[in-house]
Amino acid sequence: MDEIILHHYPASPVSEKVRVGLGIKGLAWRSVEIPRLPPKPDVMPLTGGYRRTPIMQIGADIYCDSQCILRELQRRFPEPTFYPGGADGLPWGISRWTDMLFDVAVRLSLGANADQLPEAFAKDRVRLFLGSHGDLKKVQADLPHTIAQLRAQLGWIDQRLAGGRRFMLGTEPGLPDALAYYVVWFVRGRWQGGPALLSQFPALEAWEQRVKAIGHGRPSEMSSGEALDIARARQPATPEQVDPRDPQQLMPGQRVSVVADLDSGEAPVAGAVRLVTRDSIAILRDDPRVGTVCVHFPRVGYRVATV
Ligand SMILES: N[C@@H](CCC(=O)N[C@@H](CS)C(=O)NCC(=O)O)C(=O)O
Image (cartoon, rainbow, N blue to C red; front, side):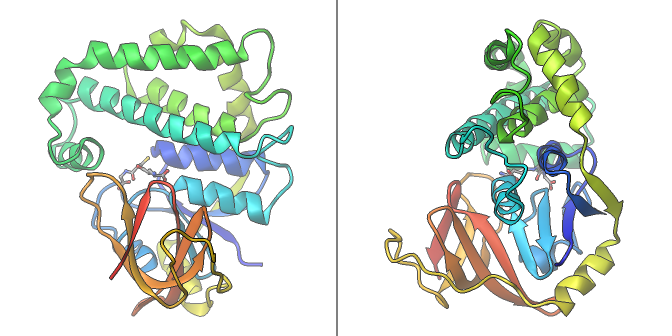
C-alpha cells in the first residue's frame, strides 16, 4: 500500500491535531515540510489551490482539511479506533466545537503578538482567519474578552477530565483527545500568558501530559519533490461513487468547484466529481507536474458549486 505522506510544518497546530491522530493509531508516515506562507509551489500541484495546512497524500489521493484526513485514517486503519466505547458521531460534533475554539485561540495569539508578528505573516493570517473586515487593532483591544471566552471553554475540558478520567472518552485515547489537545498545545506555545492560564486547570494539565506521551507515531522525512514524483507515478485509488440522496444531486464527471464556506479569501478548487457521500466530496483534476490526482474535501464547512 502507498505510504501516508503528511504535508505540514512543525509549528502548525492543526497539523499537531493530525500528528496526535497518527500517534493514537501508531502509524508510520512520511513527513514533508511545507512553507508557512504562500506561494507553496510544491503544494499547489497536489491540491489545485487549497493552501491551508496540513494536507495528506496517499499515492495520487490528496486529503484536504484535518476533518477529511482523520476520517480517512479511521476508514483505512480502523484499529485502534478513534471512537472507543462506540462514540462514532459525537467526535465530529466535538470537532466543530474545537474548530471554533481554535478560532478563539487564533484571535488570542494574533492579538497578543500583534506588535511582534512579521508584517506579511500578520496580513496573511488576519485575512485568512478574521475575514475581509479583519482588524488586528480591534483584536488586540478585545483580548480580555477573548481570554474570557477561551478560559470558560478550557474549563469544560478540565471538568470532563476531573475525577480521574484518563482521556476524553474514558480509559482509551480517541479523536476528542486530538481535537482538544491541539488547541491547548497552541495556547501554551504561542501566547506568553498560556502556561499561567492553563495552570488553573489541573485535570487538563495532567491529561495534556498523557496525550503528549502518546507521541506522533513513526514519522520519517521526505522531500516535497519525492512526494510530487509519487503523485505522478500513481493513479487515484478512489472509486467512482454517487449518493442518490445527495441534496445537491452531484453526479460523477460533473464539473464543480470546492471552497471553504468562510470569508477567508481562499481559492476554489475545480475538478470533476469522482465520489460523493454525506460527509465527503472528491474531485479529479489534472496537473502538468503530477498528472491526474483526486482531491478530497469534507462536505461540512465546504461549499460545492457547479461550474
Ligand atoms: N479547517 C482546516 C483548518 C486548517 C488551518 O487553518 N491550518 C492553518 C495552520 S495550523 C493554516 O492553514 N494556516 C495557513 C497556512 O499554513 O498557509 C483544517 O481543519 O485542516
